[in-house]
Structure formats: structure tokens, C-alpha cells
Length: 512
Image 1: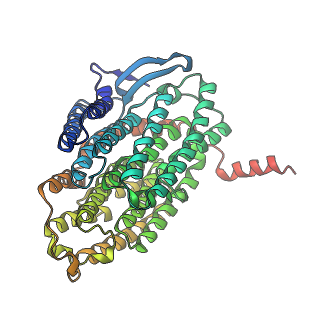
Image 2: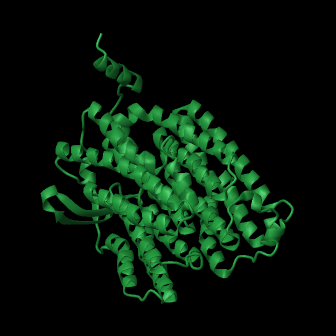
Image 3: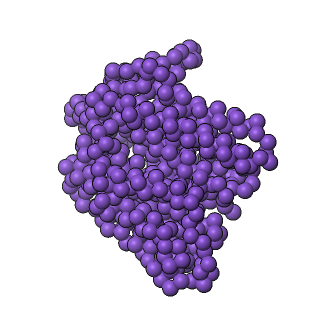
């Protein structure tokens, strides 16, 4: 794997600038809330600016990792401070930096208690998330992966809704259990390969049955994060109880880490296991697509409906990944970006009206388009993007995923396509109930969106239309990296299928 060393430590700057900002906030008096918010916004904007060289200086033809930094760290473990990005990870860093800025804007007036601690937690979360996408050492990756849990636990547990403690404990236990199993897998890999460097581990050739076991160990962590059915139940509770910024981070970045983990580790480290278990992964993805969509039709809470829609949409992402085709995997990566944009924007929209009414019940609203027409127009665009209307970003991602899945398994594409229909049903039904009925008296005097709220939604609107109309700049980042990854997976040749694996396991347990 070729490495292009960085002339300037851009990745370290992007990761540690929010941490420096959080430390600076510790020095600000608690009562100076305006200064705290202003400093947090300046730091987040600066982090977004320093991440832009990744966009402008990225070499689209380079097969390996770029902007690489490598320094000794923990000699006893052979762990390195090893950072780098490729076409699979670079867009998530940019999205993380952008979403952090928008979360600060959308929380400006809604967070009124422990303001200083909230923005410190938000900046630390941003640093940990970006670190996950930059780490090229397994131990460093695990540190960032776990570090992200602590500030997210605080964001939901302190500034969340009435059932926030239940939601945070459930979120923490689910993710911690999966992470412990992944840690066991990392330890096994270290003793087998003698290194923790991800580029080197991509070339290791582990025995087939060991790959299966390690795939399942990493699957435990990544499936919870996605979240895949049936380990998805923490997500609706976490989304419902989280403050708006917490929901936006969960939808925009955090659940993308699971799908990113499948791409970076499962496909790269365990290609034989990936080929053997591709069909079961497709089946789990289809179940998530259809189950998530049907669950949306039964929801009466705005946040829970959007949360279950995330289960369905992320099912499309894992479907594209395990189609193991160029179109499917590129569509999955693009759809991760699209989902972060659209669902993050929808949660911001819910937060805007919740700050005014303190109600998330769909039945509380009605005729909102008459009261807040600009807000209704924004919500309509994001609704159409969630459905996958041509001309929006959602269409491009879902089309590529279904195209790639059709090339691999026609039956899987046929089942998954029903999720598109169901998605249109629940999103249009939601819009009709909230915006298009007779105006309910309790919302008759709601004020229109202010400038700050409009500025928070505007970047998401631009991305919806930009990716929907001209996705080439985004797809060009991932084309070389995805091609190299799939070549690596398919180069192992044929492997025994899952049926044969089950027969061998049963024979081992119950010999004839």
C-alpha cells in the first residue's frame, strides 16, 4: 500500500484543534455564555477551514493513503501515531467538520443549562469522530472509537429528554459490548500479524476459519454502530432523548462509523469471510430496510420516525457494501454522506419547531406550511431527498446501490426496492400531517425561522442539490480506492459458502 507523506500535519491540526478549543473553554468563566458560544463557533469554523485542503489537494489518482503522518507512540505495543486518508475516508472528515459548525448554530438558544460543558463535549466529540476516520493504527483507531462514547454519553445524559438516563445507559451498553468483542479481535490480529499498522494488515493472509471468527468479532461493533437489525433498538431511544445537536451528530456522523468499519476493516482484513458471509449480510440489510420503513409508519413522534428511517436508509448502505460491486460500494459511501446531510437536516428541522412548541408529537401540528412557509419549503426539499427524488442527493446514492446490488444479486435488489416505495409513503404521510392540513390553533402564532436557523440549514440544502445534480466531484474521490479494495476482495478467489461453513460447524459439534 503506497503512502504519500504529508508536508504539513493537516490531519493532526484538524483532530486536535477542537481539543485545544475545548481546553480554552475551560478557562472561560461559566457566566460568560456569549463568549463561550462565540469561541466554540470560531474554533469549529477554523477546523472546517483547515479541513478544506483535503478537498483541494487530494490526489484522485493515488491508490494508497495521503496526508500521512507517522510517529512512534507506544513502543511496547508497537503502536504508532499513524494518520492518513484515502478516497473512502476523506469526505467524512469534511462532513464531520461541517456538522460540528451547524450543531453549534442550532444549539445557540436551545441549550440554556451547563452551556460551557455542552460546547466542550461537542468539540471533543468532533475531534474523536475525525480521529476515527484518520487513524491508520488499530490501537489508535480503537482509542478514538472509544473516546467518542464519553462526550456523547454526556450530551444525551445531561441535556437530553425525560428518559435520557435510560437512553444513555442503553446506548453505552450496546456500543461497549460490541467494542469489547472488537478489542478481542484486535488482540488476536496483533499476535497473528505482529503489527497494528492498517496498511500492512490489509495485505495479511489469515486462515479462512479464523477470518470468519474475526469478521464476527468486528461485526459486533460495526453492526451496533450502523445500526443493523436486530441490534438497532438503542438508536430510536437515543435519538428521541438527545438534544438536537446530539441527534444531528448521531445521524450525521456516528452511525457512519459502523459502515466505515466494514469498508476499512472487514473487507480489507477478511476478504474470504466477506465473500462467504455476503449473502447473510444482504439479508440482514433487506430486513433493516423493510422493517425500518414499516416501523416509521407506526410512529407518532417526529424524532422516532426519523430515527427509524435511519435504520432503513443505513440498510441500503450495508446492502451496497456487501453487493461487492463498484457501483454498490461507491453508492454506499455516497449514501452515507447523503444520509448525514438529509437526516441531520431533518433533525435540525424538528429541533427548530421543538424549541418553539416543546412538542414532538405529529398530531400537535397541522397546517404548518401556512404559519412557517420558508420552514415548510426547506422541510419539503429534505423530504424529497429522503425519498430519493431525482435531482436530489438521495436519488444518486440509492440508484447506484440498487444498480450494484442488481448486478450481484437480482433478488436482493428487488426486495430492497420495496423500501424506496415505503420510504415515499411514510415521508409524504409525515409531511401531509404536519404541513398540509387545517392550521391547529396552538401553532397559529409560531414565528418563522430566524437568520441563524436559516444559515444552519442552508449548507445542507446546497449539498442536497449539488450532489443530486452534479455528483461527479464526490464520486471522483472514492473511485480509485473502491476499485483497489474490491480487487483485493475478489482476488482471493472462490471460498466455501455459508451453508458449507454451517455444515462443518454442525459436524464438529455433532460428529456422525
